[in-house]
Amino acid sequence: MPRSRSFMFVLLALGLASTGCYSPNHQPVIIAGPRPLGSPSTPGGLKFEEGTVIQLQLEVTDQDNDEIFYRWRQAPENPAGAFSDANIATPTWTVPSPPEDPKEAIHLYVEVEDGNGGVLLGQSPAIYVLPKQ
Image (cartoon, rainbow, N blue to C red; front, side):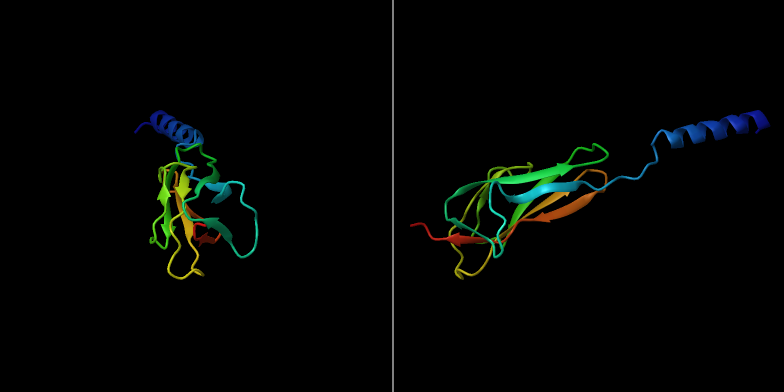
């Protein structure tokens, strides 16, 4: 390759690198949540009566402005509560019936993914189910 062409190739390659085409992906960051909206920050967990519909809070940012995807789940899976839509940032969740062991806590988990390899997992405070009065 003549010297002038190789110089032009190097300039083009450097130009592409400086436009951000090769910059690393940044992880999404959870700013608030996941937790029931308006719930107090108390040690020992939160208590809700079965059948209560709870609005969940989650605020996420992504430095790269990538599209963000969500997957909510609960653990243990049974007795099962119900998410209004487990694939959005702030679904509602209907509290299930109490577990057999009243001291067993339920945790809500959300997997946050930016579609470019950045994934993180958020966990709610412990949730204890009270029987309906």
